[in-house]
Length: 289
Length: 196
Ligand code: SF4
Ligand code: SF4
Image (cartoon, rainbow over all chains, first blue to last red):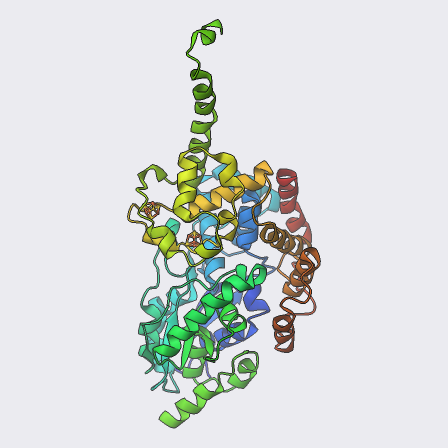
């Protein structure tokens, strides 16, 4: 996959992987890197980034939560947008920006402590937004495999779909369908697309989460889907580890679907990390082609 | 103060009750940025909440408790801990009340005021995550899981899922850490100061 083969200029973005993509969901990270590269997007990892704070810091201490997110902002060069893939990380990074814009004293105090400016004006966006704004042509030009015949449920989960405090920001309802449909896939939207995956309750109280996850998976099966596609690594994990029903439907990362369409050939490397084997999807795509 | 003794017998109770009430209301209103007096108890929030069956009060009832100024009742309830902040309620409320922000605020107040926690295993989990973040600057999930199980004694519960994740290399054995550890430690100083 040659970076320049489609004649589009390369674009640089700072990239915040977050804890899930760096570990549990390494397959999402690997496929994202491939997809981005194939479209001429350079995702430059934020040097020495730390956890965004997550719901745990948010729950226990506001200053800690703000500080953790703010440190990441202080590592982001001002001349390019900061891109995240995890909707929760995105949410906390953006919330911190808003908060620091309104609290110049806190901002100055942190800046003095770290001896560097905090990027409070720069754009913090989800990779989906990079795609929608700059990538649709690149995606078409770079597509090597058709996703024709792939029936997928676009599973947004909760956070990418409009947290009210950030409602003036763009949100992504419908975009996953548009993007993947342009590659030939067939969106199935009469399933539980926005139902929360259970978040941390999956770790603390699995018995609460299991029936809900089963409902989500069953709704996808009843609608005749081959797979669910999600842009959130935590959703992907919860949907895989908490399902107990008979239905086995693979849950793909959004980035994996993109990388597949863009011709990545090392998908076996990511697929072995799935708990529900996604290989039947490839068989189906090959048969359809 | 002698004027007080001239009040009818029922008044002191009324005065005492009126004391803390507005301050709790105002505090919650101000910190959550949410105007919850608009609620007319339609229950759309509770009907949409995926986790309502694990709650002791439905989200609209929590809101009502706040309106009534029932600080202890509400800060000690399970609901605020079960709530994951998915915003389903907030996006369904016809009065645009941000219940998720309300829940957020109530959790923080419960932590700050050190009240008995309605769902202790959840706060244990959050603390385990923070221990990992303080040590490494990033979440080390295997460490968090082991630490959490040690605390709650649930070693066997969920063992199969843990093993599956290990087999798929979804749980890294070794944590990745932030190089500037001092900057992270520094951020945690406020946390220990404020929460202990
Ligand atoms: S949906 Fe809104 S108005 Fe209806 S009960 Fe809940 S908070 Fe009140
Ligand atoms: S934000 Fe909390 S209360 Fe509201 S729907 Fe989600 S879990 Fe339920």
